[in-house]
Length: 497
Image 1 (cartoon, rainbow, N blue to C red):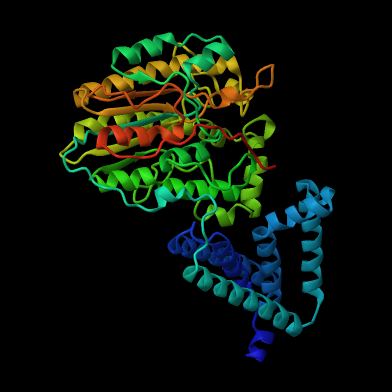
Image 2 (image 1 turned 180 degrees about the vertical axis):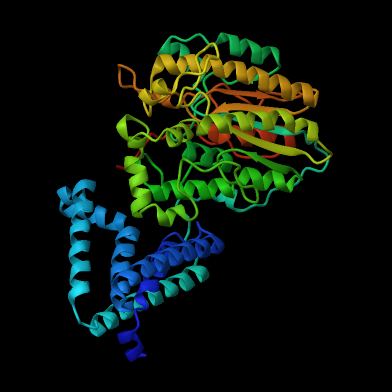
């Protein structure tokens, strides 16, 4: 074995395998084994292709393996390298400096490899042994975690963990439509903070038989945290305010995937229909996930391409480096999702059968980008790019007006197709997150919230209900449950830099 480790460059394939295996171990429970296999196979094939290219140049398998390994290792571990320099030598973490250094070192390495007669037996032994040991350690970690799964630090409160829900045999089981409009502020917030009159929508909802919770709030000001809390009917343990990390986003998405609302409704015999941006257990999203890199993205996000895509992709949306088709695709992705989900929800009632359905639809309305004027005119791409990631109050308010027309169309279609017999929950996941002159952030949480029950029994709803209690009240009303009503509070979050 020692002789093989001296002669054969096994590390060429051990490097990508270790990278994927280590990421799998670090994110145990968030990524399926099948997804990991696909990612590992992709990196291994890419490594072999790179190796073959270098072999044609060096005509020596060890030299080609060393050059390919250096290139692949830099690509895979770029994020770790850049983060190290961010902490210890900031100037070296800049793309212009780090990539230039890599090119210089790589050219020097290639030149030395071309000239040398060394067989690199000691280096082969060292690299093979190093990555073999690393892989053994990570395999051990996976075995341990498989038998001792780590507790999700954002796990919900004990009442939701027990899963001792009782089915209601004699309850009516209407279809339930959960219509989530991202960053839709409450009418009170729009009026008090932005001088916007939203009474036309309120009047429409009241005429349609809705009950509006005027002073409703979300519990968190970032979408995955708000949705995770709402769908689990609990606050999130370990999230008490301040900066949140990518790992926190991952845990939120895992809580959303296997949430208590879905578990309860499944027990009641409901079929789950997912027209949202999140994966639900057994019901993956129809669109790509944009709030948190899930599945293999938790591993691949630190690679050179993904890190540059995250930090530098905007350069290809503007200026002389702009790639038109790519800019257009990125800019209008949410618009395409909005239209797809809107059409699917409108068509859903025509497919109804005896099995009750819970339909969750998540719209990027009136969230950025603000695609339309208040009159429904598509805004030009240059304007959208100018407002990229900026909270422009006038554009947002115009988009609210446009959004209202879509909401009225959607609710009217649902009520017509279900003959008014479906429950409709219309909510924003949080308020409009733009600081006003006084620096107050309370309006970040003031969300739209209106509920339609065919029975018009709204006695359990109260004006200041927060999102964490929304489904508990709905289930207590529809299915005669006793879900606890928690204290309503808010937690201000920011992204960790």
